[in-house]
Amino acid sequence: MGSALRLLKTLSAEEPEMGITALSARLGLAKSTVHRLVSTLVSEGFLERNPVDGRYRLGLLLFSMGTLVRRRMNVAEESVPLLHSLCERSGETIHLAVLHDSEILYLRNIESQHAIRPRSYLGVRKPAFCTSEGRALLAFSPPLVLAQVLRAPLVPRTPHTITDKAALQQLLEKVRHCGYAVDDEESEVDMRGVAAPIFDATGSVVAAVGLAGPTQRLPKAKMHRLAAMVVDSAQAISKRLGYSPRDGI
Image 1 (cartoon, rainbow, N blue to C red):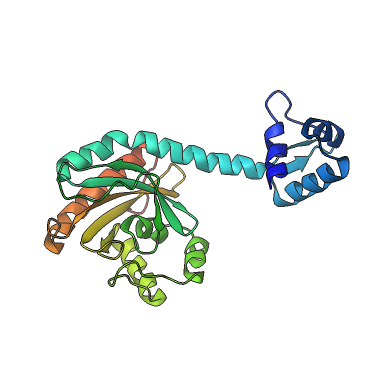
Image 2 (image 1 turned 45 degrees about the vertical axis):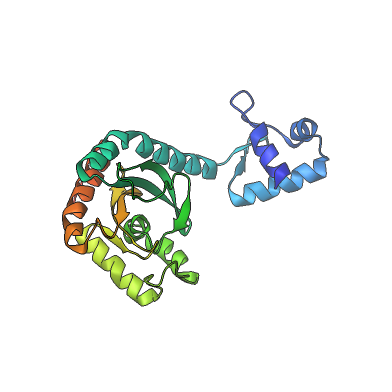
């Protein structure tokens, strides 16, 4: 793995294409070893062979992966003022999260001024299936993404966590219908959260904005009003990313 990564990093804007001999000399590896590494990287889409001169260059898979990274960077940057505004209007902690395999990764964390509040999740990963942000993302992701999550056991984080896969699928149908997801003490005891999806210019879900706080301050009767605020913020961020709703979402 280390040698393969070194090989990929060897290709640059100055030298976008290299042959086996040049790669062997640059990496200090035998030609047979480099050829084996190159063959594997080509088969996986990380490299491609120039049919004219036989040299190798970075493959389209890396371009696709780079596009995903840029999307995440864009949403993290464009969302900041709207996340702060939502925090001020709601008085609660606000999160921005993205989907990574079967987990979510928190990119932004705007803390409320209350003494009792969720701890900072910045850079933290949590299961997608039991968090409001994760559910908002899963509900609007391609079916294959949800299928991947459902293949693994749903391990409960609290006594309230929904672990029945059929029940989870029904819950995600409701999320698609109403446009937001709720976490009712399913990720952490005594904490509730609500989240809504963020879409980019292509209509793909790229992130979720979430609001979280203690159950004593977020009674169920209050969640609907907070959900409307979160949805408004998510729609405003989506608009900044170039999203134009076509189906009322």
